[in-house]
Image (cartoon, rainbow, N blue to C red; front, side, top):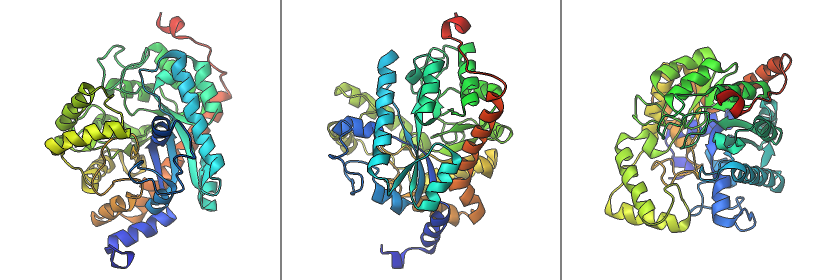
Length: 400
């Protein structure tokens, strides 16, 4: 459909995003670049349309109204110890390479002021988030080093437990956070790194909210009351975000937003493993296996309306000041039909307009809440670092 014939809500959505662009909480492009081209940016030029290869490139980010992106510097949990640390450093390096390679499009952002400056310049603010506490190898000094390199949030776990925190998708071991896990949260507060509670168990969420002296985020999680998946946020936790000041950023991953997609995905994941692939593998070879499975087993398809159902609920329970967007592009094999890649955000905003969301509420959802929460973490850091120095606690000292 041409722009001339676009529905009025879609035209309005594009206008709103021009003024208040999307801050997306989670995009796995760095890992996709690692898997597909070994970080060779010359072989995967994201200034050109990469449809068919990636969910993300700069032209489609522009079309989608993206103004700031938290790039995930994720590494898989089967990378352990110093191997995980080294791989995380490589992920950080490629984000910095992208910012250096495309200075007219991207601006490395370390603060809320940097985000606002990038928007004023017409550039996309590039931030980083580490996905999984295994990336610090139980070392608070390593945590501080990641922050010094520009990482502005850390997801406490990925799909597997770490020694000091339980994951949503592993068997409970710590019952939430251990004493060392609580110290990780306190040190993150002190240095100004946002505590990200996507992927963690509900008990870990509650423990982190109890301990944290700064607002937390969920970089890519939706509402458990709408889709009962352990990766999603229970209502009692959503309801606690107002007192904490945090932000829950709804994800687009079909198996987390569409109940019918949960069982299908479990079977598809088992099929991937049976063919020798990691179930999160999105390389071309792995996707051939996924598509072949899909041909014989039709996939339940999510839409922007599915995601909007979550946002409606999250706004009702957490409040409009405590919600955002975290699509998880290039970190999932499948996407909603009308949110196929980073160009799709206007379709979601148009759906919310149809549901009666105001311009002011949408501005909070897309831009203002995320900027505010990073600024609040910076403010908390200034206060806390004035009264306590770097923690030198160890896992062995606190947890035995």
